[in-house]
Image (cartoon, rainbow, N blue to C red; front, side):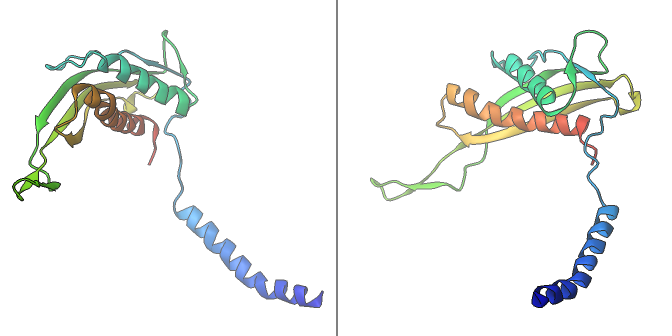
Amino acid sequence: MNFKIKNIKKAQPKFWLFLLCLSLLNSCYSFSGSSLKDEKTIQINEFPNNAPLVNPTLSQQFSTDIQNRFLQRTTLKGTKENPDILVEGEITDYSITPTTISSNTVTNQNTGGVIQESQNKLTITVKVHYENRLHPELSFDRSYSDEAVFNSNLSQSDIESSQVKIATDRIINKIFNDIVANW
């Protein structure tokens, strides 16, 4: 019994030092979380696809995904009348372009030579209008763009089901962070 009490008494200075360090670190930097203060409602309009190359499902999928992100990860409630926050915009670019030959190589068994696989790049750009009616100084108009690189042997349906999702998720993350995060 005395042994345990002595160990606790010896550990007390270390414990208090640890608490002091922890409180100092906490006072130096803290994650303040959301920049949303008293906003309660949000309206996210559909993002029409005005890109020269049109993916027929992109507009609906992007609009649904961005609405879900805000409604699931914030306390904001969706509304169609007099929202505190308005998010709207358009898809301005959807393009697939060839990129440089990748470093992925395959040895051709017939000739013994090396074949390099070519890759393509999907680029999506979205123009966003964010209006904060309670704090107008936070409002902005910005364009967001992202890309996904993939092997050129993917079919159009594979591109639309996987690569589009990668690029749009990244764009939605950027938009969400610019509106909600307060870093």
